[in-house]
Image (cartoon, rainbow, N blue to C red; front, side):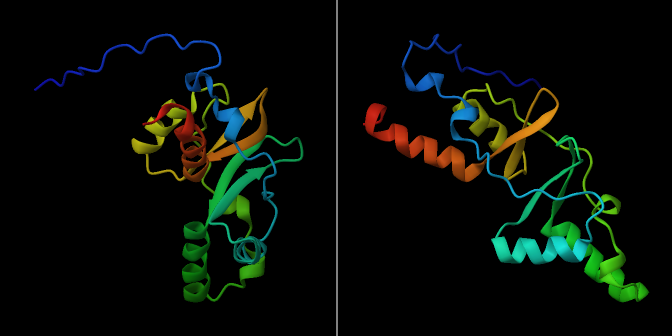
Length: 154
């Protein structure tokens, strides 16, 4: 069985049109990040205090080394309780996800929306020259769409 796409090639965007809107125009740059040597307990406190569900883990050079999420923390609560290990001894680097998908900051924000639709991710880090420079979330894409609504939707 083969699947065909009947979506034609997009026309080249004209200068100043909404098609030129990049991920970098809507990404968050003021990020809450974590370090590999932090305790999972510290991460849990930050997630609750800042009302976020996860965040990037960076080294001292601000290079992305992983992502830690609420789910990662919940796994450690369960394991810690079962094995009677103190949560303060459990480090982020032992339990963060290290296979991290990223999005290019130069990508069109609507192409990024397609990436969100085909993945389970709620957010993607943005890397430039090997450094973490921002993050785009599903909510950021919605903000971009709403801002453009007045100009090109009927």
